[in-house]
Amino acid sequence: MKRLKFFNSPLPEIKPTLGKFLAFVAVLVGLAWFFFFSESPNPRSLEYKVFRIGRDTSWYPLQLQGKEKNMVAFTNELLLAIAKTSGFHFEISDVRSHTLFENLERGDYDAVLSSLMPNQLNRQKYEFSDPFFLVGPVLVVNQDSPAKSLVDMEGKIVGVQRSSSLVFNIAQYPSMIAPYDQITVAFDQLLQDKIDGVITDLLTAYNHTHGYYAGQLKIIPPPLTNEGLRLISKHGVAQTYLLTHFNEGLKKIKENGEYQKLLTKWGLAQI
Image 1: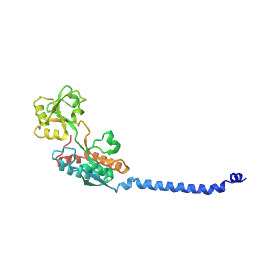
Image 2: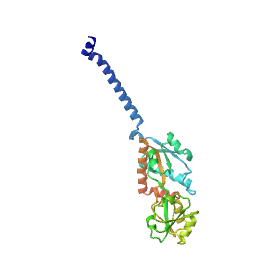
Image 3: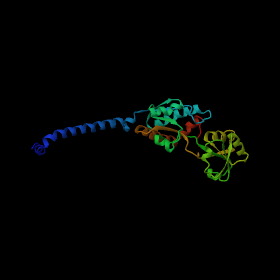
Image 4: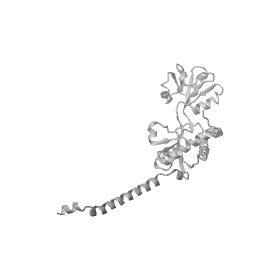
């Protein structure tokens, strides 16, 4: 009889329990909504955020050939120009190379300036901006060479520095690779027509073709890889906002000529 009584009148016993359950669910939903939107910045709030950017002023492992301070000054003015164009705020902190990404991981910075390669493995961990300064290898040939790209060097002799990773990078092309201990020797032999081309990093190539070998040798653009300096961040809403605005601003100052003016001002070169 007691069991029948229980099933015959269920509502008085269930109603209070159901009401409490619904109230509990409502509280959970409210808390979830609060924490989600408090943790996820909206575009309006990011307009006033001061983004923290880390930088290693030695630019390791890049070899800037005495232009390290020039690059520091260039990036200072580059970021100011981009931020002014795109409408974001930032501050820069200079740190040592071995702590740069450690500090980024810890959250000390929103992004860092680095030459870390945007390969598949690194892209799983970080977001990369467009390169603002390319440093990859380029092909150098005699001034009167008809070559337009590395493909045109089929059957030719191309000099590279011994033990360089470039040997691996250009192995896919049907050229004869001539290794040199000193890249200056390769340039001399190129000028003497003993070899047909030289592949070296952009800065070295530019210094030689605009210095001692000016008017005799030329660079064939573009660089053979996408190596370069970029703004790099961890994945996140604020970070994506920063990199998107950085890319937009970089594109605009390249189009209006301000980017080239900064390169010229600080003695840096791109092709």
